[in-house]
Every structure is written in C-alpha cells, then in structure tokens.
Image 1 (cartoon, rainbow, N blue to C red):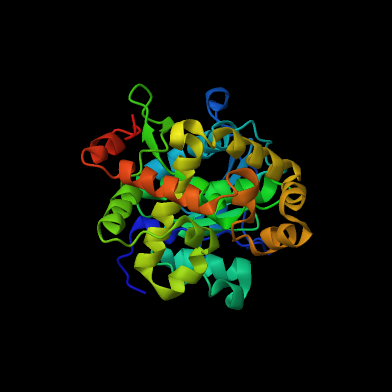
Image 2: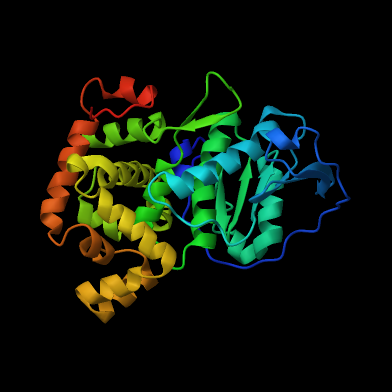
Length: 346
C-alpha cells in the first residue's frame, strides 16, 4: 500500500463485531461551567498506552482521545453532536441511536494501531492495519487518529454515519448507499459567525469531486450496475485508484438520488431510509422481487435488488440517467461551486 493515500481511500465499510473496550484509567471529572452552552457533560482523565488523554461525555457520544488542549480536542464534542443532528434530519426524520456511541481519536498512527489490536484482536485488526491515514468503524465504534483538523473531522463525519446506522437502523443499508451517504455527510465548512460551529454542505467535497472528474476524463467511471455490485474492501485489495473511483462515484450517486433528474428519486430515498431504520426494507424487496432476492439483498449488501425495489426497475435507463448526471456534475466551471459548497447543477 502506498503511504501517501488521499483522504478518499481511507474510509472503509463498517464491520459488525463486538469487542471489549481497552483498559483505561478514569476518575470522576468536573462538569464545565460552560456546559449549558456546550454539549460536554463531563471530562475525565483517560490513559491509553502510557499517554494521559481524556474521556469526554456528551449526550450522544463518549469520546476517548489522547489529544489534549488542541483545536481538534476542543471541537470534537460539538462536531460529533452536530453530525448526529445532520444524520437524523438532513434526508429524512430518522431515529436517534439506541445508545451512546464511542469514538476514539488517537494522537498518531502508532497509538491507533495499538488500540485497533486491543479492540479487535490481531486477526480481525489485520483488515484495517494497512490504513496509513484515517480510521474505521466497527460495532458502533469509530477508531480514528489525528491527520489534521479538517481531514480528521471529515473522516469522523463519515465513520459517524456508519456508527449511527449500526446503532439506529433495524436493517443494514446496501453498501453502495451506506458508503454513498457516509461520503455525502463529509462535506462541511465552519460558520463564519461562529467559527467553532460546522455547517454541513454535502457538495463541499473537493477531494471526491477531483477524483470523479479525473476518472471521468480517463473514461474510468463504471456503469451503475457495476457500482451496485462493488464493495470497497474488495477494491482496496485490488487497486487504490479503483477504490478512489468507487468512493467518488457513490458520492455522486447519493447526490443523484437526492436531487438528480429534478428530484425523481428523492421521495423513494426518504422512504428507503425510513424502511431500513424501522425494519421494513427486506419486506419491501420481497414483495417486489421475491424472497430469494430479499435474502440476497440483506445478506450480501450488494446488488441491484434494493435499487430496483425503491428507485427503478429499468437499470439500463437509470444508468443512463446517472451517467448524464455525472456529465453535468463535472462540467467546466463546476469546481468553483464545489469549493463554495454549492450544487454545480444549479
């Protein structure tokens, strides 16, 4: 694996696993006097691998970090709570997580690798230890390390979506939608009036846009049917460039489903999210395509079954619409609007 990996390659599918938390030294903390204006409920010492950090509790998260007195540590609690509010309201009125979510943010990759082994064991950790910059989510936990303020928070927003769906959804989304929405959730800018408050702008994702446009220019974007069958963990083993293209294309797919073709798929997207959250997605696929298709959709988390049930039975026609959407998305002058966090389609 090449060491200089762009942000786009660092975000993996969530894995479902249950592992004990690492041992940590804690003691009762003091609630900040600014708690009324802050999501922080308490801050306690947390020691990992001989480094004293902090365990920060908010209404929805427990944040364990070896970062202290840094902009990242200061902004994490508010950013994570704001991200959760975005997850539950941006596309549909979705339920809260079933329990408080654990997010680990280590100071460097060496600490992150040790924690990954502690949480998962050597064998299961191996699937993640090739990551050079970034992190992963596993069993409602996110495990990240500091790669700079903006990039770390963008990854936290991505993996936070996986944490959230792992906790709140009764049924797993198909990989192409779960990853697409995780990438969609990455885009943010800081509020000019309140510099510590993020404003989530799904189009504000220059990394994804740049790679999508480069892949499109080389003729390397894949048809919709191929995208629906792909899994990023398989692509990572085969080609870093292919993985970058996958993430850029599912980012475009999430935008396509939300606002492409004059909003053709927006209501079905909302219905799909609500059905998956409440445990109705498999029944919907079964009613439309039969029991075998429904079982395949839930077990494999790839394939066209969910797309055909909620969006379009005619994959060829949908693929043409999606390709036309990408053509519009990467047109000359689009990047200026992406940088501004605005839709290039307006």
